[in-house]
Length: 288
Ligand code: NAI
Image (tube, rainbow, N blue to C red; front, side):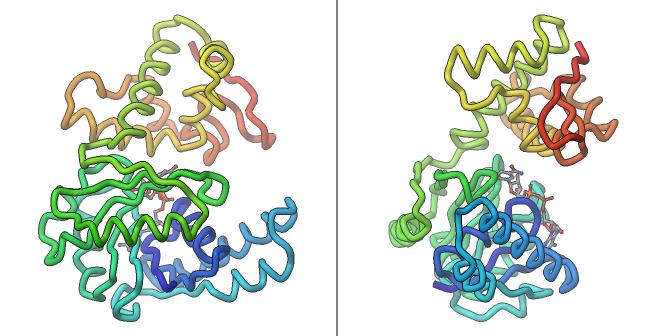
């Protein structure tokens, strides 16, 4: 299998890692060749980390690493790849222009890893929308087992079957959702996350107590505020703003979320969010 990932950030690195470990040849494209080279270096680092944790042996790391390469432009990609998956930032106009450039390389399947934008909205302007679908991966991709597959109005059965085979190739499971902004996971997950932030804002409980309530009371693997820190509060804010624009007030981002993002408190990636991550593990920061 030969694929390309466009956007070598958090998700692009994870998607490339998972495909390469399972035997696919992967080309990573970013804004230029230097950025794509950096993304490949991060993939090699994640492979070494997997080896340190006993998930891969040295031969598997070397083989997977050898299957990953960098490209500075979509036009450098070979024609007729099995899959091109877009994983750039959550902006409709950027994604549309990337997808229409990627389509010219004639991939068998064209996919977006968007976490909230309608697949039909992204398909607008594509010459072959029947080959396009959402493939929503979860962070960290090497440890998560779900691909939320989003079927657009025009997505063909052939495309869905190809995606189902790829999901199996990755050793993952799929949930197929008809296109609607936020799909199933972001629509539900972000709503819970926003309500939890409103509860901190209103002084209903501390972040730690809200998270403990949901993880022990509902058996969620982690609470909604810690999850927001892991995803990135800026990412959450972008998704919430987009969903508010289509579903209205119930997705309106709370002031506390806007303030934290404006102050650079983005969660784990910036060192602090609802928790202090500077020591490597989350330590409560109570802001209520
Ligand atoms: P990120 O900000 O870590 O990475 C975005 C990457 O895209 C960067 O490497 C950037 O240089 C690159 N990029 C920007 N413009 C580009 C262009 N014109 N051509 C090529 N590359 C370009 O973002 P992240 O977190 O990886 O998110 C990517 C997508 O995945 C977004 O749509 C997001 O909503 C979605 N997503 C994010 C999840 C998360 O937990 N962070 C989970 C699931 C989906």
